[in-house]
Length: 212
Image (cartoon, rainbow, N blue to C red; front, side):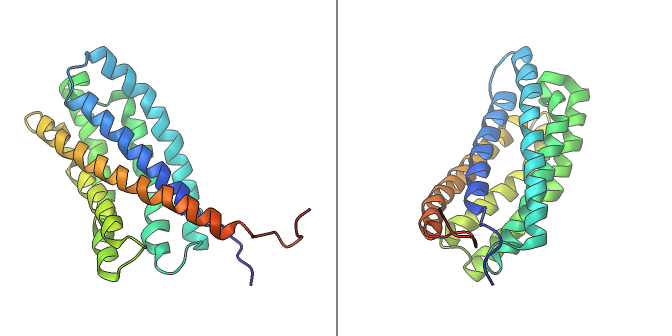
């Protein structure tokens, strides 16, 4: 039976990598920098639209992948099932985005932020557990790196509610920046390599009606 679905993993990894790096910058701006409140507020509102748009795409494509299993073997569990959860997390952050940043929105905004981040933390348990799954079964061509990527993403999400704690926000921010940057660079490293690998594999593929 011919393959009916293409492998979108290279695109997902590249999008994931750039989004994690962008999120690391958001954490820095809001919780580690001395940017004026007006700058933080304006940035957060506009950045929320980015999260909403990308979240809708990730959720839709993730649900498609969960239903069709386009990836080989257990990769559908680790990647296809985790990707729509990433979309849900982005939608949550996008909806909260208009009031992000405890420094920018005071005590009321801090609790508003906390509610969204608790939801993100709940979803982050999945990639955290999947990191040990990848290491245990040697999944992907780079199990140590792929497992570390999932571990860093999951840990960052689990720790994210601490950003709403006034006394812990700055130290936690630097830790999250490190985790997000490491995960983002690993994702881009694997994703860019996958682009060239997939292009080479599919270079000779043709639809059932042939080529002209």
